[in-house]
Length: 207
Image (cartoon, rainbow, N blue to C red; front, top):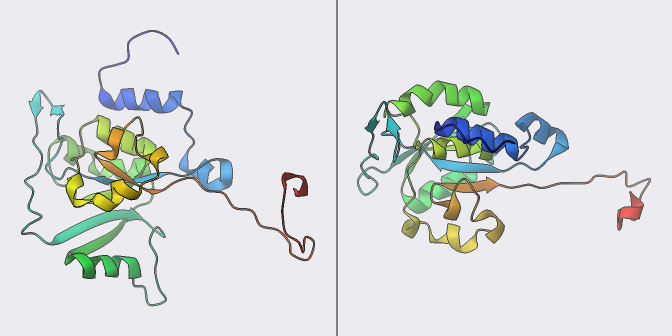
């Protein structure tokens, strides 16, 4: 890294920050090379909140949550529990408990390709067809830095901030989790042949 000033474009700044922390690609992560961390991001359906596009500032969408009881959630495939009948028990329970009707849209198969689909709408202050989306941390960083997200009303989400692991509460790209909530963080698993190792693994030496 040099001491030269960073470009003013928030997307370029976010990419440079991402490169400097040597983040791994999603494919590498899924191959076991690192930890996967995803964040649900409230997409600013009215456009670029707190930022500017072509010299004009786009304001946040009007909060209609008291009267509009629908929600569209864009997510990856296999990122939500599903029973044998194709239902999502956790999502069904959420709808029963909140009275919201949720359209669950498996619309994301790659961070970059999904962003390419909605980037123009976000920049122009137009809806993207989703109220909340699930993105990998580095892409969440870009959306927040670009002003494409709308802050949560944390008063309506007390369980999130009371129960969130402190290590996940203040990421550099979203201090205090004002715009994002982690869905999954890093984990690792070990498997072994129980015939060869009937006592399992008890120490590093067993490996």
